[in-house]
Amino acid sequence: MIPRNRPVTNERDIAKQAGVPIATWRRQVAPGLRKHVPALFDSRVLIYDQAQVQAHLSGRPIPELPSQPHPDDLLNDKEAAALLGVTPNTVRAYATQGYLPAGTTVYSLRLWTRHSIQERLDTPSRQGQGGGRPTGASGPSKAHPYEGDPRLTLAADALSTASHLPRARLAADLADQHGGSTRTWERLLAQATSRAPTNRARTR
Image 1 (cartoon, rainbow, N blue to C red):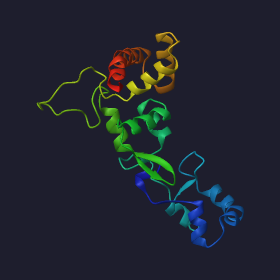
Image 2 (image 1 turned 90 degrees about the vertical axis):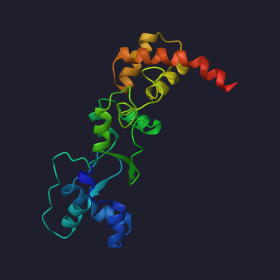
Image 3 (image 1 turned 135 degrees about the vertical axis):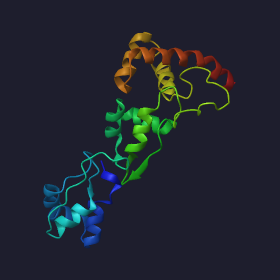
């Protein structure tokens, strides 16, 4: 997590600012930095809080990071998944299909604000991003409860690649992979099946 969207840096940029080749910097300086300044994410990409790095390199006490959750915190897919009760793969699928904002990229990591994740958590799954149509607004109603739900795409993909599996087994596998109940995935599979003939007809 990047607390409150604070300025961050990575080792390549630190070495560049010091005018030292990255290989030399990692051999001579990085071990001490990593020992005293924790990376913000448990991932291959090492990102550090800029103020903590500057304090360490100048020999000053390392400031503590804010510990209380804040709407501007930036979360990676694992942290967002923990809040939503789904898998990191599902978080990325939600973002691709519009069920979540696209997020922002920081040093090749895709991140989401805590506010956007909390908003998704507080929005019933039958509604679109932002909570659906305001009360009293006119317009066509949904054709079915899962209209616009990105999990329909996951269900349709599962049907096309594992159609030999019993429906209950397939629903259980999807629940294990993406979160949610087996019963919900059975409904999604049923809806994806009912949509299939229409989709094929449109492609002719």
